[in-house]
Length: 415
Image (tube, one colour):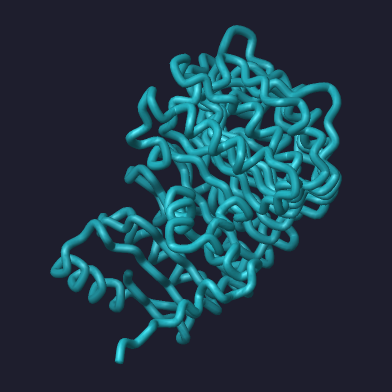
């Protein structure tokens, strides 16, 4: 007797089927309609992502069918609200032959109460003028914009009352527009500038009382009269990741001081700090006291006096618990002749040190000896040796075990 297999999946409630479909690429979700009419619920999925795989094989003959499909997916009434609408890179949205209505798609997603929008904006021209309604959408919780080295034109009317996460990537930062944007996000908690360019802005003012986490990854290029200032006023900030790269400065020390001072003063309330900067910056910066800082990761581009500045910084972080060092350039250091008072955090609080990109050179051993000599309560020293062979790692590890330690509890671990 023939056995009939039961289609248990299709018998599931609609909301569960929609949840399953949300994990599939859009093309695969559409193909499920062949299985059963019940699976035509692809039009009700809550995550819509357009990428280059979706358009692979698209020809002049079927482009109209594709545009009709998108209209049906986004613009028909009685659709469920969207959790996420994403336009990935690798798509020629500005292709004149296809004439995609990208602005219309964005507006349709906003009309459906979308919570997260993630846009790669290479298709909007030299100055990015996205639909103005994007900046007054009350349903948005997360907004991510990749501007491909362009300035984002923020309208005068901005109200993003529920936005908690704002990420700007590869954007030319204009101080007035950005200030207008973030000052009207009253519950913003996560703000990120990733691989952005601070070339034309006279001032970047980040004044956000609700902000908890900040990423500031900026390339700063001198053009004419340099007068860039970054001011941070975020009293509830808990974590900051700061990377500042200076290019083309004739008077680098003066420019660096002018730029970095507002940043450093504005992040002194954080508990966790990741700092990557040109060496010229730390030589000119006056340090505040980081009273509640417990975790610090430090990377420097350059060579001069980094060990002196690092010890000075540790003096300003009396309660530091965890220290990670990522020196991107191996140069001469002077740890053996460092005549400075030992920071109190080394004597009282520092329990974990992680050193990345260790290459086994004498200067690195000097630095490690300094910390082992002075870190009285150190529990773990972790050293990254991925650039060394297994034989070299074994030799270096044995050498490290021979170094004297002030803390008897300290374990040396390589990774």
